[in-house]
Image 1 (tube, rainbow, N blue to C red):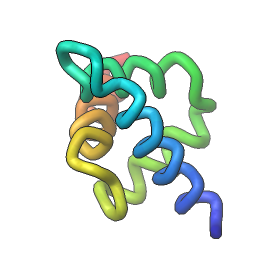
Image 2 (image 1 turned 90 degrees about the vertical axis):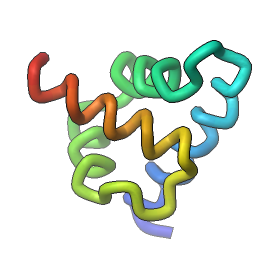
Image 3 (image 1 turned 135 degrees about the vertical axis):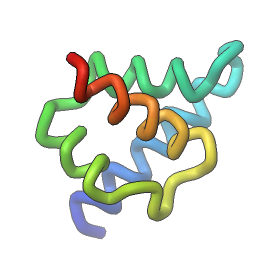
Length: 70
């Protein structure tokens, strides 16, 4: 398993763990924003939605959108 595959796995696990939240994608994006290294975020952005669950993909899209403004 390469680094991107591990990041995809982690993003999917985080999304699964956030399903109890009112907005799981937003909660997942916030968790990744707070705890992932910038290099990790860049790698997952470059991966796109490949291998991500629907919630994780929505979180990454939301994070990428706001990352440009941060």
